[in-house]
Each structure stands twice: as structure tokens, then as C-alpha cells.
Amino acid sequence: MNRPQIFNTDDTIVALATPAGVGAIGVIRLSGPRAIDLANQICRNKDLSVQASHTVHFGIVEDDGRRIDEAVFTLFRAPASFTKEDVVEISLHGSSFILDQVIQLLIRRGARLAQPGEFTFRAFLNGRFDLSQAEAVADLIAADNEHAHRVAMNQMRGGFSQEIGRLRTQLVDFASLLELELDFSEEDVEFANRRQLKELLLRIVQVVSSLQESFRLGNVIKNGVATVIAGRPNAGKSTLLNALLNEEKAIVSHIPGTTRDVIEDVISIGGVKFRFYDTAGIREAEDMIESIGVERTFEKMGQAAIILYLFDLSTTSPAQLQAELDTLARHNAALLLVANKMDEIKSLEGLEAYRKMGEMLFISAKKKEGLDALVQKLLSWVEAGKIQNEPVVANARHYEALGKANEALQSAVHAMDAALPTDLVAQEIRQSLHYLGEITGEVTTDDLLGNIFSKFCIGK
Image (cartoon, rainbow, N blue to C red):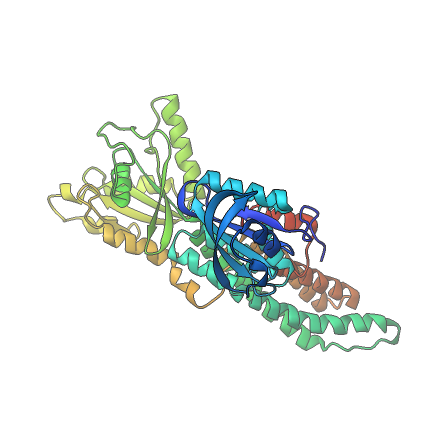
């Protein structure tokens, strides 16, 4: 494995491990061969060099006799630490001035300011976990709902890595036999049973395809379900958004065309993050600005996972609704018809004609009636419960690598079906092994590692 040039792993690094800004405490992290020595140099009343691993010590931080702060030093001796190097975490009062003073003091004593993701990179390099687990650390930090947290924890514990590892191990065994055949090509021998090899390839294709399909769910859980609220002007779209958010986010007016641009907000429902978009009403625009708003509505609908098509039940006939729905036929998102303003309906007769047009819910956004059923429907479509017992792909890089591995595997199957030479089959299997190895870090490049870890925050 090549090591990125941006990281030097022979020195001792330091960084603030807690968010910047004023707080009760701030934690500075040191990692490297001199971590304990440097911490000991700034601790006046305690000899940290003789203390055992996983111990906590009170100390006075001084710089040439000038007291900076009182601190708590936590020691982790190699290899029993996050990075598998000597690590010291120094907890101080959360003043940004104090924290900066101590970091600069440690740098003057010989530490180097860590780059983004450098602590996690050292953990990966030293075998604490593989690359996909390292990436899960960033996802865990960014998790803002229950299911995103669960996916990240499952990946960090190696659930996804183990699945990929099993696939590679099975492939390597057969790939070795094929390579052996190539060494004896002149003798026309066959070490790899072709029937068993094809069965294995087809099984792996099925597993990889399943992992690819899980990306839709994983991406939704990680980034939020793109849910567009669409409909004609005055259907109650902004009122519905405000009701779901429980705040006056969007301007509500009886004047048609009030919403000219897309209004976006995020809410966690049942542990799943939904990204709602309130859009301009769909109609023939009366001016250029409204026209741009309508164009953006259709653009967002094209990007949506779910479209809530809202219509005013008190003013829209079944025929009018059908005409409106005909304009939505080109969109692939899940479509839920939402009949709004039930509070203005005097008679429930004739509602069956609406129901025949598709799955439909009847609500009053103004009175906040029927919203529970709407929320439960949204959750059922996401099917978030699936993530509990099986690996879910939530990383775009993993999804891309799985796609390339799948292509190579299927090419190997086609090559076998066409009775092509062994070297062509072996080449496709090598390619699939390469792409699967990229996921876990068994195959890496400087650019790949530099790109991944540069997206981490400093101090992690």
C-alpha cells in the first residue's frame, strides 16, 4: 500500500479534538512517538513519563514558569489507543485563547499541527480498522438521526467490511487456480473447476447487486429523503410545510403565486431525515420571476425521491386533477396524492372518484388533521427497518466501486459462457478483486487516500 505524501507518520501531531468556540472544556489531542514526552514537558507537577496507560492525571500547564491553565491529562500508550500510537488527550478550560496557547506551546516543543483526518489515517495505517471503517468515523460524527447513526456504527464495527472480505476471499482462491493454469498454459491443464467458478461468480454478482441496491436507502438515510411538495397555487403547500416543521417557515397567503422560489428545510421523522422542498405553484406563469420559480419546481421534482402532490379538494374536480397528474408522468419519484382542505368540505360524497386516481390521503394542513397518517406513509416508503440486520451502502465511493466490480464479474461470466481464453477470464476477476479491494483499502493510491481523509475535520 502506498502512503499519501501529504501525511508524514514519523512525527508527533497535535490538534484541537473538540469544536472550535467557547465551551466548558476543550480537548487537545497528541499522537505519535513523542506524545507523552511533550505532554510531560508542559505538565509542571506530575511526571507523566512513568504513568501507566489508560490513566488520568491532574496537572498544571506552564510555559517557562507562566501558568496557562489547570488541566487533566489522559494517557493511552501504544498500541492500546485510537491510532495505535502513544496518545495524550489534554482537557482544559474551553477558552479559545487558552487552547491556542497550549497548542502553540506544544508546537514549539516539537509537535506538528495535524492535517484534516490525520489521526484517523494513522489508525487506518496502523491496522486499527480498514478504509471503509475509517470512512464510517466521519459518517458517525455527521450522523444527525437514529438510522444514520445505526448505519455508521454498523460500518465502523466492520459489518460491511466483513461482507466484502468474504467475497474477496472466495474470489482469490479461484483466481489463484486460474493464475496457476496460465503458468502451465502450454500443457493445457485445468485446475479451477469451471462449473463451480461460474456458480461462485453468479452468487457474488447477486450479493454485489444487492449491496448496490441498498445504496438508495443508505443515501436517503445519510443525506435525507428529498421530498417535494408540489401542486397548483393556493393548494396549501406552504401551510403543509409549516405544519410539518411546526414553525412559520414559508409565507402563507391567499394570493396565488406567493412562493416564487424553492424553500427547503430538514426534519427528522421517526429517526429518518426528510429534506422537504416547498415549491412554486404549477401554472402558466404571469411574469418572468414566477416562470423561473415554476421551472425550478419541475427541476426539483426530477431530483425527488418522493413527490407529495397537493390539491385543493374544495375547488379541484376529478377531471381537473387527472389533467394535472398527466403532467407528472415523466417523473420517477414515488407519488403520493394529498387532498388538502378537508375542513372546507361540507359533503364527503364523490370522494371515491378521487381515490381511483392513485394512492391518496385526505388532510387539512391548516387544522393539522391527517398529518400523522401522512408521516407514517412517508416512513413506510423509506423502509428504514431494513437497515437493522443487513449491510447498507451509504458511501458514494463504495457504490461506484461495487458497480465497477459488478461489471467485471459479469464480464467474467460472459467470457466463460463464450469459452474465451483463460487469461481473459482471469483478467476480469483481477479487475473485480481490485475494485473490491479499493473499498476496504487493500488496494489504495495516494490520491484516493488523500481525497478521503482530507474531508475529515482537523483533530479526527
